[in-house]
Image (cartoon, rainbow, N blue to C red; front, side, top):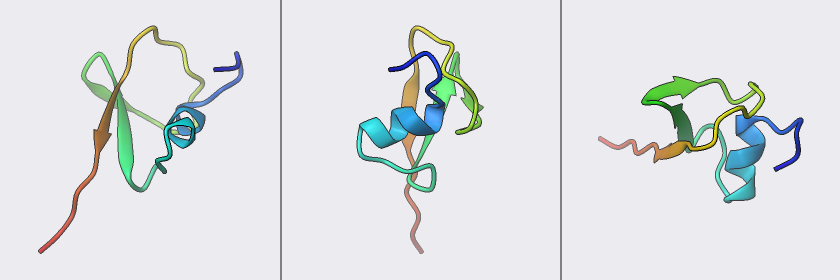
Length: 50
C-alpha cells in the first residue's frame, strides 16, 4: 500500500467496500478514511439478513 493509503483503499484492494466489511486494528474498528498505520489488520466481512 502507498504511504497515503486509507483503510478504505485497503478494502478496495481486496475487492470489498466499507459497506461490506470493517477493518479492525488491535480488535477495534477504524474509520475507512483513516490512513493505514498498522502492521497487521483484521478484515471483518459484514453479513446481514432477516
